[in-house]
Image 1 (tube, rainbow over the protein chains, first blue to last red):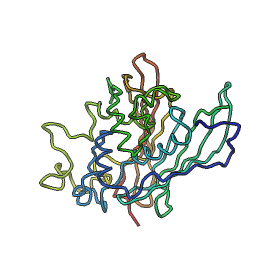
Image 2: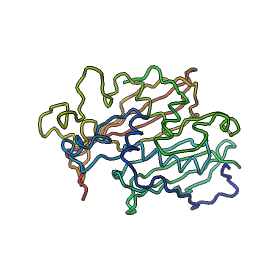
Image 3: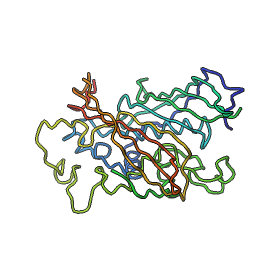
Length: 140
Length: 165
């Protein structure tokens, strides 16, 4: 299940569809679970009439969380040592997102093997919504 | 800003995993989790952000007896002067988030979170006017005082809503 330094190569990739046709209901779910009730994510009236956006949009952390699902599916549970992102574009209801990890380095530190990954999530138009990195412990 | 007690609870982990669309059984099935390498239910990697639930002063949660800036009878419950320059709608937008895991969270952990302000900087944005960035560093410690997660967040306030063209 876990990745192995023996078989992994720089340039290897892992890609997953992380959401199809993102719903406003999922934004409500995420607001409730995370505790971030900023109305720009759930309140269409406020968002269009006061904040000045065409509709509610996803919490950045929801996109980071969905992208994290692709990472844990790839590296295994409890293996991540670092995970960071920049939110480069907003994510809207109806969006379909694909997240991808690319192996940048395989290294050893104090007898423990690690993989460094570049992380990128794009929408249905191929525009990047999240750009980041992750590191994880891997088997020898 | 600080969280004195952030209890990591199995039910909360299940709801959070559902919200991010992750049906991995390690987030909700104790028997399955026992047979995995971690040996117990774990929290997903971005779960620490839900410490907001346990921050008594978190500004993005409605509070009993106080007006809320989301819509009710009117589009907003808070009247603010025009041209206030908060295109994100009160809370700004999230620009970056970084986590360093010293270990992963599991039910039964009880964390504290201390938040330190970091750098602030400005940039002229192509799609939203002047951008003011501010960084915070949050250290999550467990019931034994051990550092378990270091989180660095960057928020941005935009001069006007982000242009969608």
